[in-house]
Image 1: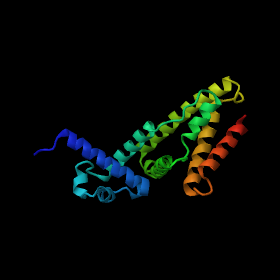
Image 2 (image 1 turned 60 degrees about the vertical axis):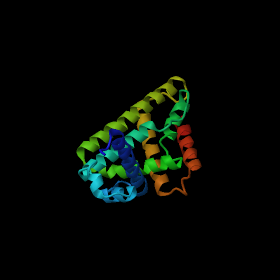
Image 3 (image 1 turned 180 degrees about the vertical axis):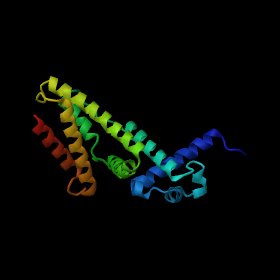
Length: 193
């Protein structure tokens, strides 16, 4: 009996879940057809139907990472400084899921830096993130919750701070547990005022 489109889509979801589990456990450095096949309990031959080459597997993993990041629930916050704080908290590895996602993002940096097209794409993604943050900061400034100044420059500093904190928390989770990350972020935001 031939496979139906539903079978194919179900199998593709299973493959995607296996890719995600490999990424969460081993990062992009451990992402191989063999590792995904082992996680899936399948042969590498089966995977070549979905990913004829390693580059196809990496592209799928990057797409999966972007999709999951976009779909991740965000903290509800009004506007002003509370919205800035919520946006920055959403980046930090404060939960097991956020830790896995951040670990995958950080491990993907090497892959992106090695490929000019991916590097350009990542540059655009981080620029869009800064633009959103800039708009939140400008609102906080208009409300008098942050001092006047260049909101773009403040956004650049805030993004740099929080990404540095992500790296610290991933390398030293006992020194930077969620409550410590939150305290450091609050200290950073207080210093802006």
